[in-house]
Image 1 (tube, one colour):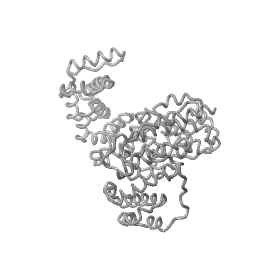
Image 2 (cartoon, one colour; image 1 turned 120 degrees about the vertical axis):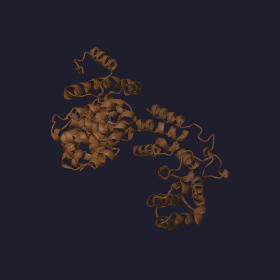
Image 3 (spheres, one colour; image 1 turned 60 degrees about the horizontal axis):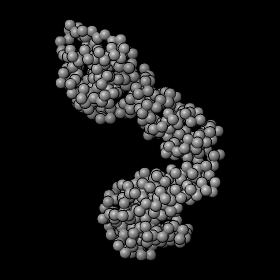
Image 4 (cartoon, one colour; image 1 turned 180 degrees about the vertical axis):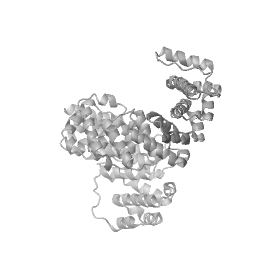
Length: 501
């Protein structure tokens, strides 16, 4: 056992032992006299504990209301500032700039900021791992690039102490590294090391009786694709805690699983599917409590093709009792269509909103005419309300033109949706049957959508031929019709489009 721990420790140390500063960047926060970051002593060589009682200088930094005041304090006292005061200065600069929406690029160009960074580098050897993590957080929030000497030095300190981090610190470090501005060989090495260290330490450090910790670590393990054995152990532990999990924790579990690229493999791991099913029930029964941001995250999961029946129906039910923006309805409809689920009452509400809010349909780029036409086509009812909604959609000429250019197969599909509710806009039909459009579409449409393109063209022609007896506009070119029918025959589809008179 000792050999395995030592081997893991050595492996992570070797992984992170790559040279970090072979080529210095022109913009750095260190004078030449300080030398290379790799020459800095490792953490632990000198142990200095941050002062518990805030001194006068720290208080002044915390009370400062402007960046000018902070820079003035730094200019006067940077030569004597300790670790606590350096962190307080960085923190104040971030808070003030965020509150006043100031350009952090201008902050970093100030001489006082350079002095603060140089002071931080001089005292880097005295930083504890916790201080180094705090400094990494602040530099990330300020947008300091990963290839600067300050960030490199912080990462160097973290590199030497990563094997002693708690699981919470490892997850925090991973989040900060993911948000870094730019990359460097050192930050990339740290990002590779975090999951390896986490996988080694989780069985040792994790308290499997603590529901909150297990839930958080399970989400991290799933997102990083860690060992199946570890995920199974966490899932089995979670099963005994599912009744006590909060709605937020249950939603976190579901979203972590839903957005994993290996979800189908994960569901084959013992315990994971049961966790997902029980989390669904918790989320569905508490869906009214979630902020709209969380609801949109679930809609994104549905649009990805992950169908969670209980949650989907609960979200639709919530939508029926609230007044959502049209673009939010568009997202919901897209999710429903992706999962092949449609509520007739929802369809009627959407048709009514389309008729009443024509401006948003035409001007809001977040509202998809393709999704809306698919929605009204999916509802069996064909009353006047749906016809009016179809006319409003047909008048969105700019959106249809954009759809025709970017997704020709989507354009034809939208045209089919309009004709299904007795709406036959001549301009759209002429464009869909134009030989130039069809020829160009064959080169533009991805191979996986070509069959649907031909199928929808035939369906569009059939609808026009059946419903418009006196139609004198364009129809499919004969060669395109023959190609489409041969394709359908090869797929053994029973589909006989009527010939135009």
